[in-house]
Length: 173
Image (cartoon, rainbow, N blue to C red):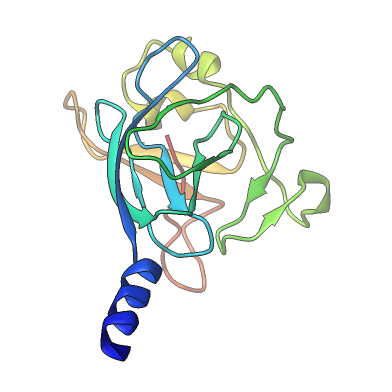
C-alpha cells in the first residue's frame, strides 16, 4: 500500500506535458528563432523555420516566450499553444561594445570612435569594403595586394608598427 502511494505521488510530481506549439507575429507570419523557456529552469528551445517548437514541460508550468523587437510573454503550459508576439516599440539607446566586450556610452570612452554610414559606403560604387573605406576613415592606410580585380586588401591603422607586430583592425560589416 505504501509503495503504491509513493509511486502515485512521484507520478504526480513528475507529470510532464508534451508542448507542441507555434509562435507568430501580429500579421500571422511565423517567428523564426524565438526563444521558449520553462520558467524557473534552464530548459528551453527555439522555434524552427515554420515558427514551430516542441518541448516537455511540467503540467503546471509557465512558458516564457521572447524575441528581439517583441514583448516577452508568459503563458501557462498547454498542449498546443499558438503564441502571437506583439511588437515592442521601445527604442534602444546607442551602445558601443569595445574589443573586450565591455559596453560603454560613447561619451564615456577614452579613445576615438568613428562611424561610417552604409549610404556613404554605397556612394563609392565599389563592391570591395576596403576600397569603399579609402579616404573615409582617418588614420588608416589601405593597400591593394595587386592590381587584379578581386585582389585582397591590407588595412593598417596608424602606421606599420605596434607592440604585437600586427596592426590588422577589427571591423564588422
